[in-house]
Amino acid sequence: MPLTPIPAAVDLEELIQALDWASDTSGLGNMAFVSRETGQVFLTSDEDFGDAPNAALPSDLDDVARYAIVPTRHDLRLGKRLAVRFVQASLPARLEDTYEMFASRGAYARFKAMLESERALDAWHAFEAEAVERALREWAESEMLAVAASGPRH
Image 1 (cartoon, rainbow, N blue to C red):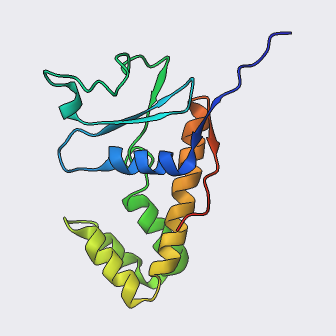
Image 2: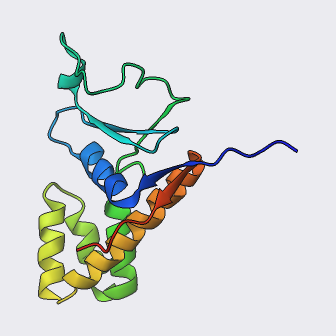
């Protein structure tokens, strides 16, 4: 009977940080990778692949058999769609306002201001954290990785 390989375990908190890194839109070309063998997370940017590559990074990061590319929040649908789901469930009277907010730039600042005025910011943060963790666990499972629980989040 063939043995099923044990998936590498990646720390949940490191995976969340990698998601945030990869989701940064500052134009640095951020990407994050997880070793399928060790679960180690590698954060990169365009600067790491210039004339003098970053010696701290494995030279074979482009090998998808060895490294999984961490998705972005957009890839995991953790942006506007998540905000709308939260409002549908928690503040249905503000749903039309939410759609209008997300029709233009600066939506998250307006969204968070609305949540503050509704005293729902803490509930949003809890909802978002749960959705992020669930999405990352599903992604990790699809990539044949295991997620190891971190210590308590603050």
